[in-house]
Every structure is written in structure tokens, then in C-alpha cells.
Length: 314
Ligand code: PMP
Image 1 (cartoon, rainbow, N blue to C red):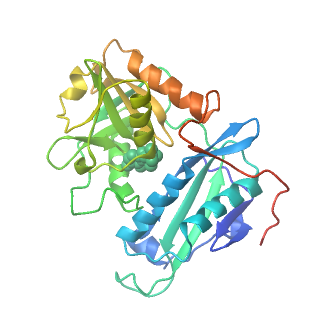
Image 2 (cartoon, rainbow, N blue to C red):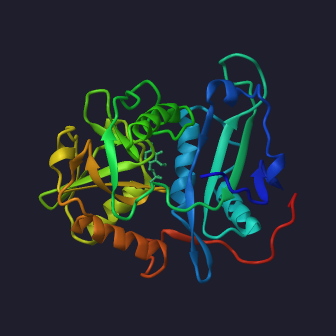
């Protein structure tokens, strides 16, 4: 989907016009992939936009920066406030929020220490990520392996990791699938190119532990907590590839993908081919919370203060 431009982007403490949020071609990030980022959804409630799990996203952003030794000149609270400010200023509801911390224009060479840190926060309208998400998507196991431990850190949401994701995604699309599932360096199930993966076998919900090169997904954590609320047993365990083929249910989770049932893996039908009861129960509970149809008992939603739009430069 083409980017839908909004009015303002937050840059290092100020709102600037969308078209002025530009970087130099020689910025460190362009040459060496040195950025960390987040993807956050704001849902449309009667009272205004509600940001889903803001604190956890900001924490993961700062964790990613810490792993890469990027010094961020803003506190967790300042970044959270900046996200609220840009969502309020642009008045797009619902929306997707994209904070980015990057190494900017400084010195030549791989050494990133002399390149300045730039923080940007954009937001824009975005709908469903995976086509056909309601009835379930057809996916494959990728021939590309997920980034191996101690190569690129999978726990950091860094731009560089998404070169691996792009290989997985392109291969899947060119072969007629909606998405690819990557195995880790030992051949165990890892995750999708931009989603965590769950499966259900004999009433038990299973997902790969963080040691299998998965991003610590915030939707993953949400689903684990909701399964606990619904009395569904959850195990984090290493999953051999063939578990995907004999599972009763398989689904993806992610900020973009939300909860997306998987209908087939490598052309092997998952269960009956229709979204299964545990997937449906978790999906229903997830959407009831994010859309405000049930109480926000976990305190996952942050309201965006409503009020007059902020002028550029504020
Ligand atoms: N894994 C990868 C590789 C991702 O890009 C994403 C999306 N951020 C996820 C998992 C899901 O994480 P989250 O639920 O926090 O969006």
C-alpha cells in the first residue's frame, strides 16, 4: 500500500512538515542500516484515538537502541509524549505510528560513534496488513533462515534485520504465498517476516521462545496474557517444522497483522482450513479490547489528548 502522507512528523523535539523530514544520502543509516524503529497502532474509540501498549513499544525502542549503543537524547517519557503529540497533531484516527531512531550524517566509515542520532516519529493511515486475513492466509516455510544468534540481534527491532525479512517476504510473494515463515539457524520454527507465530495442538497454545531468533512481539505478549485470561494453556517451546503441518490451528500475531489465521502451510491445510476455535476466541478478545468493546483490564490503551491541532514547529 502506498504511504499516505500526513501533515507533520516529529523530529528531535519539534513538529516539522511531512515533506521536510529528509535525510542526506550519506547519512550513516543509508549506507549501513543503522536505525531502530517501532510500529504502533492507535485504534479509533468514541473518545478519540487510543494507542495500544505505548509504554511497551517505547521500552522496546529504547532496548533496541541500547543493544546498538545508540545514545538517545530523549527519555522514555519524552518519546511517549512525542508520540501522543504527533498523533494528536495529525488528527489521523485510526493510525499506525512509526518512531525511528537513526544514525545520521556525520563521518564516513562503519564506525557509527561520530554520526549524530536523529529521532523521527511519523504516523499515517493503515488498514489490514495481510490480504485475506479474515478467512486465513496461505503461507510457506521460507528457504531463507532467520538471522542466527550472535549475528544480528533478533531482539532488537533494527532496520538491518529487515533485509532478512525482505528476502523471506519476496520469496513468499513470488511463489504465490502471502507470507513466509522462517526457521532459525537450527531448523526450528522462528517467525514470519514481520509477525510472531502461534500454533495450537491438542488444546495447547504454543509459540517459539525468544531463543529461536524471534522478535519479542508486543502482540505475542498480549496473546500470551489473553490466553491466560481465557484459561488456555500456553507453552513457549522449540517447534520442529513439521509441527506446522500437523497443528490444529496456526496464526500470526503482530502490530500490523494483529491476529491473522493461517489457512495452509506449504499447501498443507491447517486443521479444517477455517480459523479454529482457539484462534477465534483469542482474536475476538484481542479486538474487543483494542476496539474498546470490553474493559481495558490490563491497562493497555493510552488515550491521545483531544484538543486543538498543534501548529508546525510546536
Ligand atoms: N517479528 C517481526 C520480525 C516483526 O517485524 C514484528 C512486527 N513488529 C513482529 C514479530 C511482531 O511484533 P509486534 O507484535 O510487537 O508488532
